[in-house]
Every structure is written in C-alpha cells, then in structure tokens.
Length: 165
Image (cartoon, rainbow, N blue to C red; front, top):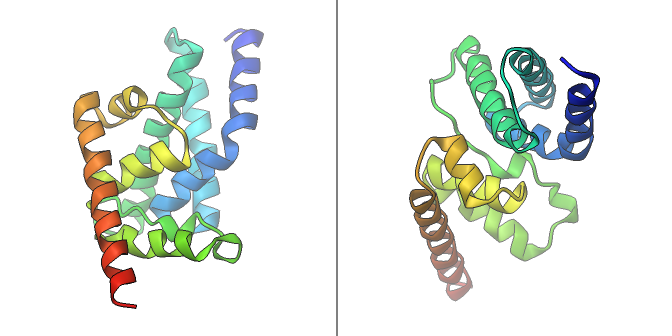
C-alpha cells in the first residue's frame, strides 16, 4: 500500500468519521459498538485496498458496505435477528432539534428498513442515488423510488399528526 493511499484513507476518515459512526450507530444502537464497527470496518478497508485497485470514489461506497456487514456481524453475535433495524433517534441529538425534526424522527419508524436506509444515506450522510444504489446493490431508480415513497409516507403521517392536534 502506498503512502498516498494511506493518506487518502486518513483524509477520508477525518472528513467522514461522524457520518460513518452515525451510520453504524443507526444499526447497532449502542455507541461503544458503533465505534468498534467503524474501527473494524476501516481495518478491513485497509486490508482490502492492499489487494485491490481502488479509487477515492470507491471509499465512500465500500466503507458503508463494510460498516453494514460488520454491524450485522455484531448483531448476530448479540443474537439479535439477522436484520438491520435503522433507528434515526440514535443518531440525532434531541436537545438540539426543532419540534419539526422531532416529529420526523418520531414518524421515521413507519418506514420499511430499505426506505430508512436510503433516507439516512441521502439526507443524513449526503450520498447520491448512484452511490446508494452501489451500497445496496440495486438500481438508482429503485433507490430513488424508495426515497420518494419513504418521504411521502412521512409527510402523510406528519400531516395527519398535525391535523389531530
């Protein structure tokens, strides 16, 4: 591995560490485990990059894939169902959120896990549809549809909640 590549991964981690941690936390729901997941995933990324030719664009997608699989391993060891259960509230600081943000977090649970993952990757982490499609091994149009459907569900639920106030 070249010093340039190590530097590139180091820079990527410095820029993305909060987003990577939040993604891991949204899956495992425990801060210490989320830190371990990110650390283990970065070790895997370094080992992978020794034997594969990667571009800097590959880092974003591959790091999320590694975090997801490592988090699933943690859940399996905990004997939790072999299913990701994304939780937006674990990655949001409720003290600094407006009432509208809290309303969104509250209604996030009505979404499917795929819709939740797409929304977290797009809105919280800033990934593009193309990158999310690579992460989820699906087409960009499927990812886009899940995003729109998830946002629409939340808007409907939020409007219904406001109408009942």
